[in-house]
Amino acid sequence: MRFSDLIVALELISRQDADEALERQARTGRKFGEVLVELGMLSAHQVHELEDGLPAPPDSVLELGIEPRIVFDIMVKFLSTAGQGNAATIAETLSISRRLASVLIEQARAQGIVELKPGIVAGELRIELTPRGRSMAVEAFASNAYIGPLPVSLKEYSARVLRQTIRGETVTAHAVLQAMQPLVVNDELLAKVGIAANAGRSILLYGAPGNGKTSIAERMVKVFGAMVLIPHCFEVGGQIVKVYDPSVHKRLGTRMEATHASSLLADEFDPRWVPCRRPFVAAGGELSLDMLDLKFEETARFYEAPLHVKAMNGVLLIDDFGRQLVRPEAMLNRWVVPMDRRIDFLKLHTGQSFQIPFDQLLVFSTNLSPRDLMDPAFLRRLPYKINVSGPSPEEFAHLLRNNAQDHGVAYTVDAIAYTVDQIVRHGTPLAYYQATEIPQQIKDFCDFLNRPPIADEQTIRFALGNLLVS
Image (tube, rainbow, N blue to C red; front, side, top):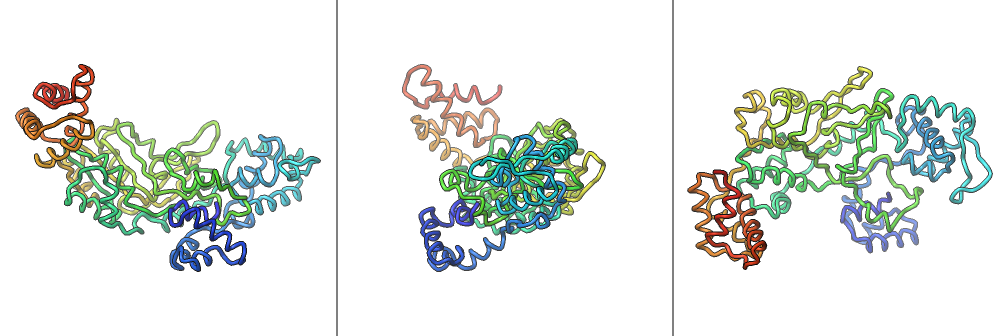
């Protein structure tokens, strides 16, 4: 991706402004960042911060920071599977610049691994494996079947995680307010959530069900605006660990790249890193301890990163805590060292352990009593314990009226008072989800009977009969 594409994806400038700056760059030969400053599109400080934060594209095998054998193993596996290739296809598959792909091809030719064949593929000379290269591919596949972007080193990955720590951003009250839309959250709760997010420390959200704990946690990642770079994978002890997951990581610039595809020659930072929004990962009752360990693919013989590594530099939500199959004590013990020391230890199937940063906003959410789930020692490690309570009668009435309007249900002041009275008489606390669900059920009832959607005693009793347990 070009620097110009990235800042458009970050919504710092428009596509039209970027094209104008690129045209001036082509005419003047000046650096793109200098042109942006000259045109007043970005400040010199903004350009410096962006450029300084991007890793330069490697121009040599040495600059990749990993064992050369790993690089050539992945290349020969690709050529063995594809049958042939060229500099462009090798660059695209290995996520490197075409310039570096040409360097790899020349080095492979010098070692007798590949040879040039007659014929042109996409305007370039065709490359195939030699008998020695095919033999090398067999050995490489015996080690693992990974074919894809080259890994970064564990050292480089760890340094990048610390550089883009979630504690490095300043969270504002306005950002929290915007992130929580359209939830109804009172000022006190907004302040608690904002302060906790700004501190970047572990959080416990607790309280009765149906009041938005999960919804609040899901929106917390939106208070952070910075881009993070996620590696496709990293290498440790000769093993490959996949990190980038399209189902988790929201890549920047994908729509734009479809229409403004740039040559790999135009890569202005290391393509092994994927620019993304800060990730959000949630796990509920299905969470088990083995999901927090490296997952070794027995057939392919490489690793998938665990959930909390995919959530690195973002938000990790442990939802419905206390309802997992594993005992709460065992789950909590897994987090003690990471929460205290901001590091974690993972183990390869070879028995080798390695250290990795632990940098995410860890959020526990439960509708069970925290004192029944956690001992005092662990409660101490959760500096922000936020009680997400139900609405007041006034807040409930306001939300019920708004939701009724959204569903086209006529809901009078008397009908609202009747609804609140019936819930209180039942002995059930008011909850935000009730104000959302009741108008929907009334509309469903009226639609079925082909009558006007009006909240009266009959329709309200129907809705409450479904929501409240006798």
